[in-house]
Length: 94
Image 1 (cartoon, rainbow, N blue to C red):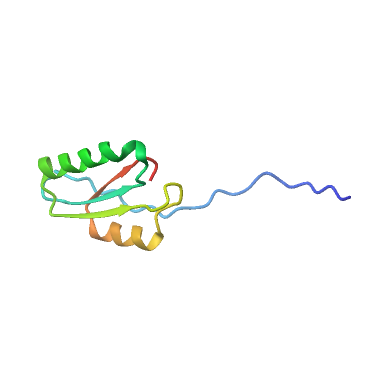
Image 2 (cartoon, rainbow, N blue to C red):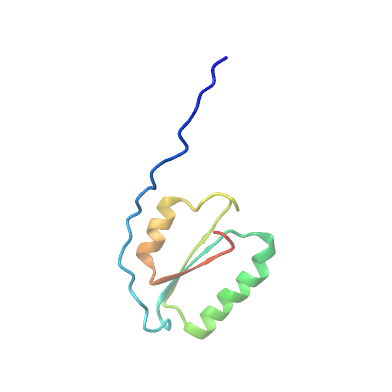
């Protein structure tokens, strides 16, 4: 039998961060929704989207509704969403 010791230290991965661009107003902006579709939040999420559309009249809406509650959203879909929106609402650990 061999006992193997592992060094528990590591390095933190670097993440590229873009400059944050503040929104002056949400009216008429392009909105993205990222939602994990967990049963506990379905009614809330539907009401939230309805209120956003009533109050802010988005120019366009992009949605990522994940099929697997626990898996991350696909990178390609996220990249497209980021290019197509001005702001995003992310819900329930999406």
